[in-house]
Image (cartoon, rainbow, N blue to C red; front, side):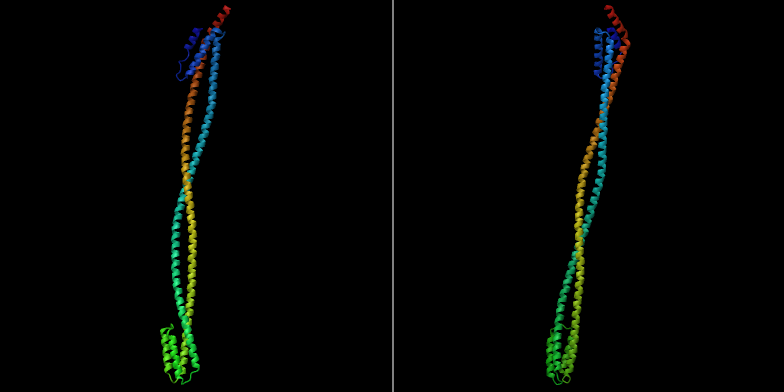
Length: 361
């Protein structure tokens, strides 16, 4: 029987260095057990064959379990890879959105700064225009006040002079030359200090001189003076009315200009405030987008590194699994070969052993 075992194992394939050492030990253990069993059992070869079959079944079962675990691992790899790829895709889209947002914010800030400069310049010019218009209007008003005072004084003086002449003309006689002279002297002094055009003043003084020297018709000369005074009074009143009208128009025009400039300054100031607020909002959005982009870049880099690590780990695991499957296949082939050799080469020895045992008994 021992010779039969020796012959059987001598026919086994040369040990494969790729087959794990544990397999070699399993086969040797089964063989040893089979040899010892042959000495104590009725069918030792059969027992060995059964044990080889059990060992093959165990290896197969372990392979099935490893396969199920590997399938779960592959599923985990695929799920995580999809998740990371999805995160990377979202990050790429997010980066594009943030880049567009940053570009828009920068454009909005630049546009706002241009508007702020233009509005500030416009407000400054409007304020200068209003200041100049106010200065011109103040000068116009002061001129009118002075002119109105002069004309009012002239009108008052002419009115008193006219009243004086009219009062004295009523009591004059053809021979009252002394009274006429007194009146003309009084008028000369009265009118000398008022603002009257030089031509009018010279014309009046000539009539006064003539009336004081006219001994024959003093009353006629005084009537002519009354006419001149009336003309001068009407002229002064007309000038004062014209000055008042010009002052009213100048005031109205100034108020219109002032209102227009004031409205413009108010409107531009409001626009300036809105533009500054818009710039501040754009600056805040820019800072936020830049921060988000930095975070997104960081997350993208981390996810990319994680995906690379995942792919490497999964490839290593796949390689390990492939090697394990190959080793297990070699192990099963070796077990099958051992079983086959024992079945083919130990059948006669088994029968003879049983025969010897029967004769002895």
